Structures are given as structure tokens and as C-alpha cells.
Amino acid sequence: MPRTLRMTKRTIARTFAELPATDVLLHRSGLEFMRDTIAGVLAGPPIGATLGFWPIQAEEGRVEFEGTPDFDCCNALHAVHGGWYGALLDSCMASAILTCVPKGSTCTTLEYKINITRAAPVGVPVRATGLVTHAGRSTGVATGEVRGLDDGKLYASGSTTCMIMALPVPVPDQTT
Image (cartoon, rainbow, N blue to C red; front, top):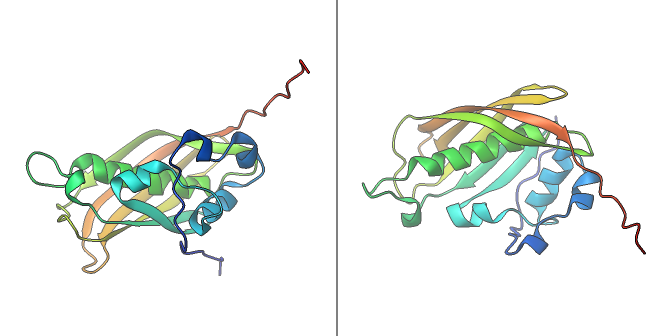
């Protein structure tokens, strides 16, 4: 059984300087990066704090996020904005692909699609699960679901394709 890790300490970057530097990323596989973010060793991206979700578990090919939409995520129709579901699904699906990426590489979303099955009420906690269906040398594909933590209802689902690429190796300053 693969080892999983549940988030115990949320560390959220508040400035660009607090985000992990490229040399930090170069020395971790995508799975190590996700596990270190969940454990609070590395600061997580500020979008999670802004939108109220964060990763809680990571294993190869699978990542879970939990979150709760609040009033700040609503549109003019008093409903949770579709972009909230999109950001949550994009995050969990791309993170699932990242867990399959080797040291020295990363991934970024090329495209994603979501289907909102029903509106999640404001204040209802949800879990988003991203599952990899393909992780190759240059692309990865994943699916995702957002379900209520208490009711198990499916609120949204999606799919994504990500580009997998080598990180640029920083060039030492030759002028000194």
C-alpha cells in the first residue's frame, strides 16, 4: 500500500520570496514536493488561502484537497462561482499529475474541463480527488471529482491535460 500523508500544518506563502525557489524544486520529485507542501515543510500557494482549499493527501497518481466555499466565492446570483470549482479541480488534477513527475521536472495545465453537477451550498465542506489516467514523458492526463464531505454528493467533475517539462537549471553568475 502506498504511503499517504495528510496535511498537518498549513504553511501558505504570503510573498513571492516565500514560494519555493527553482533550486528547491529541482531537488524534489513532484510527489516529494506535494508531500513537503502538505507537511508544511514548503509553503503552499496563496490561491488556497484565497479560495479556501488546500491539499490534504498525496500518493503517486492521486491527490486530495479539502475546502469549503464561503461568501467570498459567491457570484451575484448568491451561488458559489463556477470558477471556484474550476480552480479546485485544476489544482487537484494537476497536483495528481505532478506526483508522477521526476526530479528536475514540473507540469503545467494545458487545458481542463469541468462539469458542475449541482450547486455546493456556501459553507458545505467538500473533498476534491484528482486521479491520473496517463503520465508520459511530455503529457499527463487526469480526472477529478468534488464531493461533499458529509453527504458524499457529487458537486462537480472534470478532466485535464498537463504538459510535463524539465525545469530550467539556474546558471551560476559568471561575473564575480
